[in-house]
Image 1 (tube, rainbow, N blue to C red):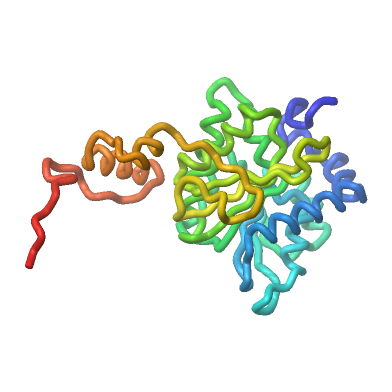
Image 2: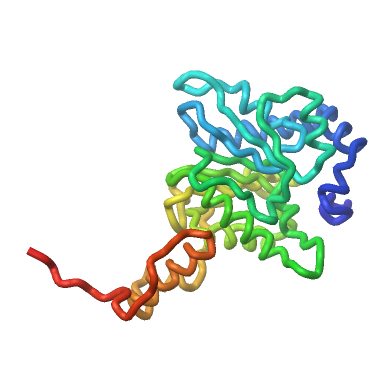
Length: 271
């Protein structure tokens, strides 16, 4: 059976008839609700929060965000973005409570730094693994997405992305892109080894590397070579490490201090 992302780009696949059929299908609504509740449990939000819904579609997940109370009171406020104008049109017809934005997550999110307390994405990230033109690649799309998601979240904020990887290679490509953006990451599989397996990528902004201790049953994500060396104390020099971090911040649009011959130099202790 063909995967939807192998047939057409998402903005074309989810045309008006398909969007309405998707939204009214009782089986899809049940599965979507179950995965959204699971993602919310992994977010562990105890207070009403501002949540970004990536791939919001017709607002099925957003409807749950608007209705589930927290231990500290009312439900969450949310902003949803999707690449399909038809899906968003259905959301408007349904009069969902969140604000909606037409956008391609693979081109970056474009929100102000620290805007959101948390983010969820249900059945959307696998679409970023397809390059729609010869001028870009799947890793480029994933990099823009995760870099901008990292910036959009408050430090300590968490994101949960449920997605359907084609295979282990694609699952690792997605997780690697998240870690390179600066996230702490772990993978969780519900129903592992079954046809209905659901994969969740749990991300924390401000905690790097493996965060498998956050949720029982979570798998570790192997970090890239440089991060391994840094954890083992094998980085060439303190200055090299500083320059790498500055380059990463510059790619995210941050303002960093100019590099000079004094960069990374150890200072004497002042009394």
